[in-house]
Length: 163
Ligand code: SF4
Image (cartoon, rainbow, N blue to C red; front, side, top):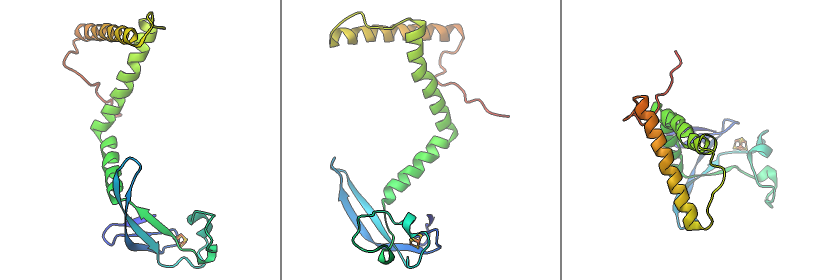
C-alpha cells in the first residue's frame, strides 16, 4: 500500500484510505515494549480485492462485512528505512562486499590453502587452543601477504565502480 506521510494514511489497491483509529502497546516474550498504530479502511464494501487483501479465514464475521485493519510499528518502519539507506549507501556496499570476501575467504584459506580439515585434539579447551593457533597462523599469513603487496593500513577493499 502507498503511504501518505503528511496525512498519515495508507492508500490501498482500491484507492480507499486506511486512517488511524488508535494506538496499541505490546510486550514481546523477551520483554521488548513496542507501540503500534492501528489503521482501518474507510469502506471495504464491494471491493474486488477483498479476499486477497483481508487475511484470516477463521473469522466468524462474513467476508462481505469485514473491513481491512492494519497494525504498523512506526519505529520499526523508521529503523527499517534507515537500515536500507545504510545498506544501499556506498559505504554499506563496500562493507558488504568486504564482509563476503573477508569472512568467507578466511574459511576457504584455512580449509583449502592451509589444508585444515579436522581438529587434532579432543575437548573444548583443546579445540579452542587449536582454533586460536590456527587464527594466529592465518593472521600472520595475511599480514605477510599485505606487507608483500604493500597494502598495510588498508583494511577494506575498494568497491569496483562500473564506468
Ligand atoms: S479490502 Fe479494503 S483495504 Fe483491501 S483493497 Fe479492498 S477496499 Fe482496500
